[in-house]
Length: 199
Length: 68
Image (cartoon, rainbow over all chains, first blue to last red; front, side):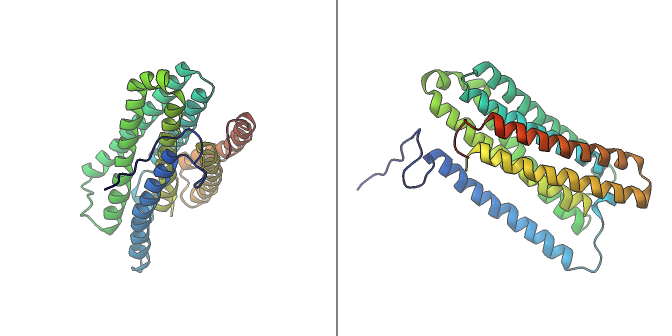
């Protein structure tokens, strides 16, 4: 019986054109696209299947969602700055930008918590109607992905120094993959915001 | 696709979102006279310009930071 080992490589693989880690990350993100794509499709089918559908701006808090959009766009900037700092061998700046990214993600969750709390106070639950069902499903799943990003980024923030000292190229590759995931999470929100709140 | 390329794509989409939200907010204000939404929309239009400026800056600063 033979065993296949996928080794870590710093340089792009001659066949795929990218590193193995990046290829794995994109495969994972492709599965995420299918997950969110299925839910977006469900939203479209539910919405087009009825004669009347509520406008999100009448029932949801657009100012809070706008604030959250600003927070996530800013966090994508700090995430890429964190990776760029590593490429420039500036570990201190990397940690600063990554810490800001985590704080912004937590701020997003706090704002989302206020929004959910307001809805629950007014007895608006996923079981209330189809609109709230798809709203809570999409934003809830997105929120779980934000929490996942916080966990991964916090791990790299607090436990990344040793790997940076021993394998700097590998560590920079990991941060780039974490950055790809974080940008995907932000991109999902960029689509959720207009679809749920504005249309 | 590298993080640099994905970031550029993300910012381009964000520019369109910010501009689109600005237009939506102005139209919403005309219908509802909601001043807060109008202010947010105006800020969003300014934000779309700032994002475009940031995009040009980012591309020029990271040009030598790997293939896109």
